[in-house]
Amino acid sequence: MEVILRMLPSRISDLIKRLPSTLLTEIEEIRLRVGRQIEIASNGIPRFLPYIFTNQDVEQFIGKLANHSFYTLDEELKKGYVTIEGGHRIGLAGKVILDNGSVKAIRHLASFNIRVAREKIGVAETFIPQLFKDYWKNTMIIGPPQTGKTTLLRDIARIVSSGSKEHSIPALKVGIVDERSEIAGCVHGTPQLQFGQRVDVLDACPKAEGMMMLIRSMSPDVLIVDEIGREEDRIAIMEAVNAGITLMMTTHGYSYDEVRKRPMLNQIMNEQVFDRYIELSRSNGPGTVAAIKDSEGKSIYYKGLHAHV
Image (tube, rainbow, N blue to C red; front, side, top):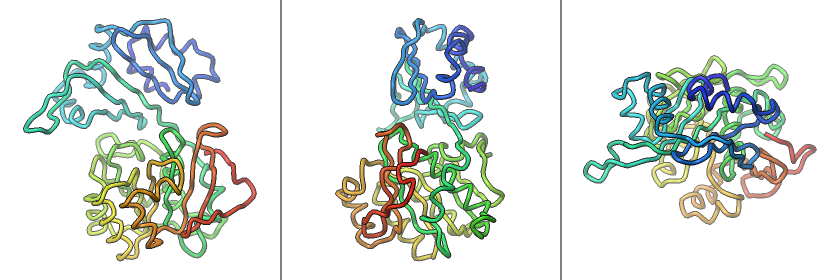
């Protein structure tokens, strides 16, 4: 949280610092909206601080985001978010400027959503016996927003690239296509979060194009991608499978059955491209593993099924 607190106007950071330490460690989002109270979300529960976010606060906050250079911020504004040191992502909303139907920039910023990136080293260790047997299995992580999909995927990438002496797993080459700078949290192309030695990241690159670029240029053993769901993603996935590359990916959805109803994903699932499906929920708190299923969608039961990510 120290990085985020340094970015915020002092009056706001002071308020947040006064929160109970247990709450501070669980903050998932900080939402700043002009003319409204500051919203803090933890465990999916919103709380409001007794402070109204002002236009003066906006100017101070944007100045720190841009290091007082709005030119450097322009490219970030086209995407609708900025990734800062530590891998924290700040979503932006305001007046959209269009150029030939495409977003050119966002001006008159009035809303900010700071998503706190939290590393949970070791959360994927429990699932190694389900995901690795002689080789890493193609895996899809399914869950609605804020259920820990990216957190789990990130730790899987760390384990794959580091190997595991305990499980006699060698360290493999990992290619990460990080379209939203959320998996590795790159700043100026350098990952801010912990991985092994054998990780290569394409930051802020469209998923489908990035997968093909990594296959051609970096010869990864395993590809890591967040939030698949478009037709071009399916084509790239099939190219990777045909090239003998293992896939570790997430997709938005509430269950295996719900995801299967989508035409693009249904086609991949019918071809049994993925060997494992991990369903996440918030039923017992964020990151609850509701089920692990095989390539046919059959549940694999084991001790600790309802573990937390």
